[in-house]
Image 1 (cartoon, rainbow, N blue to C red):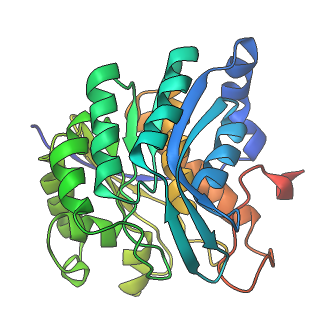
Image 2: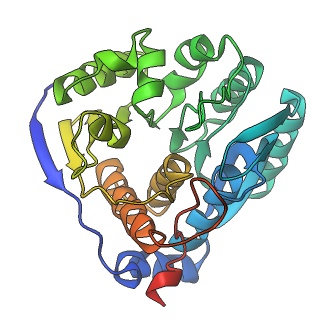
Length: 301
């Protein structure tokens, strides 16, 4: 695969400018997307974040709930996993009734569910599959049972259009210590290793990496795919309200793909969307921990 190196600075346009094209398209005939993910009782991440993101992009949201969590802005206090057969039944009835243009996975919670989604992809040819390999919460709570990493690598990634791990998840997927990822070159290296498991693209999200490296001015992501390597950089927003950014980014990519954007363009749009949502929620005070982002542009109204 040919490798090129490019760096782009992502800016955050006014929300109405960023989303107007997508909303106009969706109003002609709503396009359907599917989220297969867990529920966040605090409303910041998971299915709840996906629904708000899909609404912002003007697409019709369908869902398959994989787990119920008891969580808020402070942490995760309980998880009850759905049986894979129940998740499959939700997916089947949606896929039989709707023309689903893109599918994103979030918290799948257990290896059996990962394998079930892979079977679904094999049997039904899921279009524009965005896999966000949720393994651990920001607060450090495990969100995947043992064996999940192997199931992702061996069963599901081969069906994915893009895989979107953060630094910690990328390290787990590559069996290395996250502290060993110290540079852009390291991010590219792990992205290429994950690409070897079969997806078309890999986006390694590096916002936390930059902060831990003492670079509070930037939030870089590395996109690796057929076009080569692109570093998508953006100003880092000083805010405690960043819960659900990963879920929202992957949902935004799925929305863009469903609406006909190329993968690189959908990823740029998604990063711009999350940047705008982080800025909008920077001064919010919802809960006592890390709050949600401004998916719907309330601060711009």
